[in-house]
Image (cartoon, rainbow, N blue to C red; front, side, top):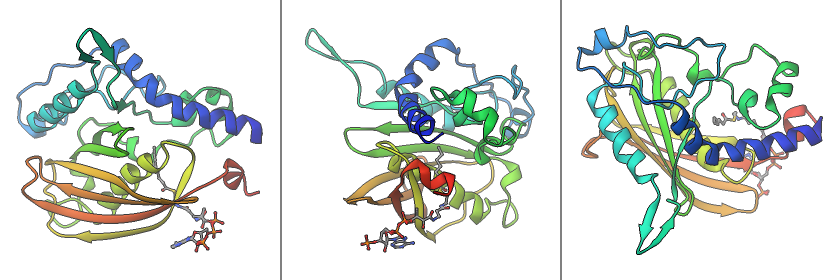
Length: 250
Ligand SMILES: CCCCCCCC(=O)SCCNC(=O)CCNC(=O)[C@H](O)C(C)(C)COP(=O)(O)OP(=O)(O)OC[C@H]1O[C@@H](n2cnc3c(N)ncnc32)[C@H](O)[C@@H]1OP(=O)(O)O
């Protein structure tokens, strides 16, 4: 089992390179200009039982979310230097509702390990109602950017996003960055909430690897408005790289 888990984690890392392939296989939806409430009721042409890349645009995405997606997605394209083509250091990470199932070898393990388990942030079926997000990583710069459109089911204070939902997304973004070179878990997360995030709005979450000391990774994260003028949230996190046996209680 431990060996299978190690193979599986290598598969997780391969997901980064798989993203380019997935984006070619799945066509991007055109986004309608209807009001946010109408947009959030749009129905996606897929069921949860099929693998679906949630990081691709769907009709619930508003213009700001689309604009930012297109900006970062264009940076993932192959760069040309003179005659030579170079792979971009930016990658879009595909988003599944169960990573385990779609990683190399994971399809077998996902039947053995709590087959009903699903990724917390990808569980709300109605498009636009929960966490609509896409993650981009820059491996060279050790940086991760997430574009998040927070839906109406994430309410905390009236009309605004719940602090726990914001913390969840910060954990996801910083966790993705910390896990780029291997399995890691959050040991500590400190959050300063500076200004509330209105429901339905789009925010940019930027995360940086500040320092690495042995197994410890110190990561920071900033949540801002799309134009960067408004700071919503700031956070620092400590991640510890783990051996996958840690998850098996050994
Ligand atoms: C794609 C989706 C991505 C989503 C990513 C989401 C990530 C998550 O949410 S993970 C879930 C939440 N996190 C958890 O459940 C973790 C629970 N905690 C644990 O399992 C363990 O405490 C764990 C793995 C963090 C550390 O345990 P362990 O590996 O035994 O480390 P340990 O030997 O105690 O400590 C190692 C070092 O880290 C330090 N350390 C450990 N915890 C902390 C902490 N909370 N604060 C500061 N330092 C700490 C220790 O002091 C020690 O330092 P040093 O080497 O200088 O003496």
